[in-house]
Image 1 (cartoon, rainbow, N blue to C red):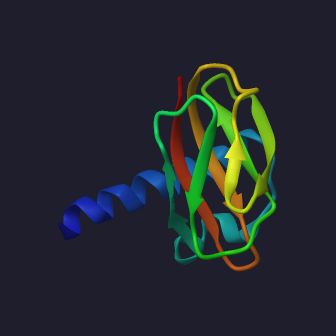
Image 2 (cartoon, rainbow, N blue to C red):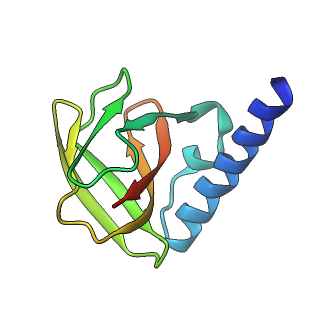
Length: 108
C-alpha cells in the first residue's frame, strides 16, 4: 500500500511540475510535494456537473486538456458545471491558500 501511494505521489508531483512549466506558472510552492494533495471529483466520468470533495475554500478550478488547452471554471458550493467542455480527459488543478489539489476528469 505504501509503494502504491508513493507511486501516485510521484506521478502527481511530476504532473504538477509539467503543468506549471508548460503554462509558465511561476510558483515556488508547486515543486514542494508537502503542498500537493489529491482530490476526488465525482461522478467521474461525467457529462454535466462534478462535485469536488475537498475541505478548502476555492472559487474556481483550472482544467487542462490533453491538447494543453486551459479552462478556468467557476465553482458554486464545490460543484463545477462542465457542460461547456469538449469531451476528453482533463487534469483538474485547484489552488487554495495553503495547498494545491489535483485530480483527473473524464468528460463524456
